[in-house]
Image (cartoon, rainbow, N blue to C red; front, side, top):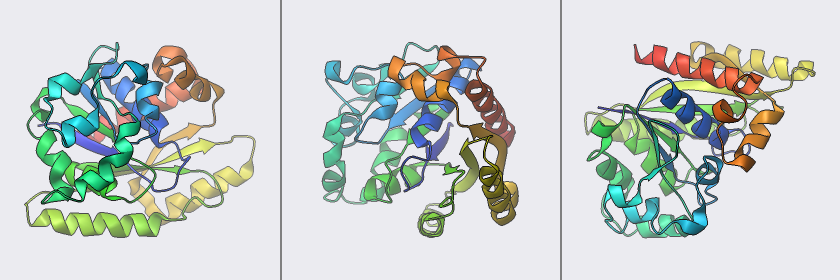
Length: 257
């Protein structure tokens, strides 16, 4: 059975999509069969991995709501071992569509369980909110990865996020399933600024072993790669950003062991 990891934080601009794309691509380069699920209406993960939204006939909305077969929606990314369930602007209507479905928080789980044997890892890029769409991702997942930017408001909103996670964990107990914390990932560290390192110390103080050893630095190659529709491991494999995501992938694999 595949490991399903949601990349979640209701705060925008913390590196969720960057992490979803580059962790997926790096795991695929390491020989793991990976499915990337884009649940954000902005569809940045879809574009960032090189998929042209304008040529998409179907998207993850059709898979979840319109009962379109997985193989009709799933797209090969051109990276060996990595497929994607892409998003388009149509996903903006997913919240409303889900609200009319019985057991609506388990819609994605019910869909993925049919195909999850095909993949070793499923990585879900969540929207920047604690919406019903994000709840669907959490209920479908075996663990969550939380990117936290190394800035003053780093811990803002994490209490609300963890409260939501606890609610989902309690809900899953009745179904004899668990949702664990894969880890907290520190992102966008500016090595020229001591304040960023103070945030690192503060986050490690509060969350201890839940924090990944890997820290993703601010890196121009990480910013540019999506505009070329390429992961960092393709665009600039020797950059500090690529090294960081290779280290993160190794930590995720170690967690599995």
